[in-house]
Image (cartoon, rainbow, N blue to C red; front, side, top):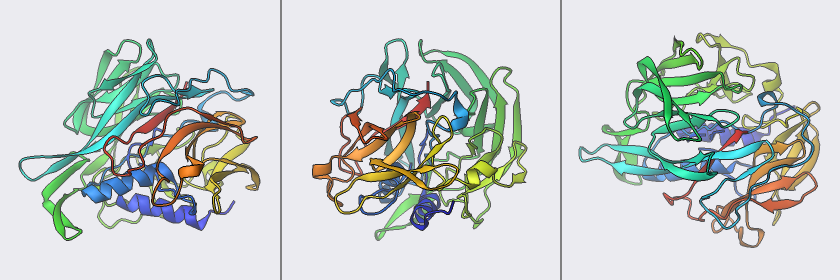
Length: 406
């Protein structure tokens, strides 16, 4: 399979500027306009961040790779839809994927001239199936949605909490010697990947100011030191040094430069300007070649169906069409074209969760960012899952979902 040049360009742009928390996520994500095959979530956040002078990383983990769970689901089950809620108050889910949490981003200015890009989180209470405000700086939800890994405010921090989603209580803490600023569950939920920093990765510092639109604004500082791979059951934490190197090819320029798990959980990666869009490392920090299955995916953000036969492709809308493609994972040939701007996660082998703006109000520059979560079938059938987000890309109340296998 060859990579779409438009998609590769969009990924490079997002990597060089910032990447929000992101399936989570998102787990920010690339900007998608109806007439250009780019991605919505990352670019939307990136645009807001750039305007604010904020360089944060929200590369969230996706919600449905083939390695993440059992295959063979044929019908959509347990659909929980609330098309009148945005942001959602009650559970949104379809099939194997659910919105386990969502976040907003705001810029907090400090008296000393510094600032912090702050994530505000709403986490699912699985007992009530409602989203509750959570005062954590960073979090990720494990597959099967029983546990969340949480980090306290004032990043970086020296412990990781394991929180019960039914009770909202931290069951235990895992201490680390080097402070961390992000955490992510492995695809099987048995390990954690935590990126370590000397400074707050979302901090903006007066002594690193730069000019934005003719004004001096505080800027990020690169302070990554490496990453931990942590066994959840025992709490054993192994550290691998991997500091940021200035002007290193493929490393984004922001302060947050988190590592992510590979789809099979055997390697970790960071953004890179190569064919896969990613630079891979072993869990000890040694650079490794890209896994074969990932070299054959059409885009860095592509998501495999549960049975591994299909993979999400690019936005391919023309004129007034708001559609994206599905490809055969083995041949790379187009298998379907379905409604949606950004295909986020598979509900089963024939249905996906996607963002889409309202067709009648989706004019570029006006309503293209007024979008809602949909359940979309390969047959083109659409079921609204959430209400519409505001069309203002820079609204601090704009929410971003974390999709998790349940």
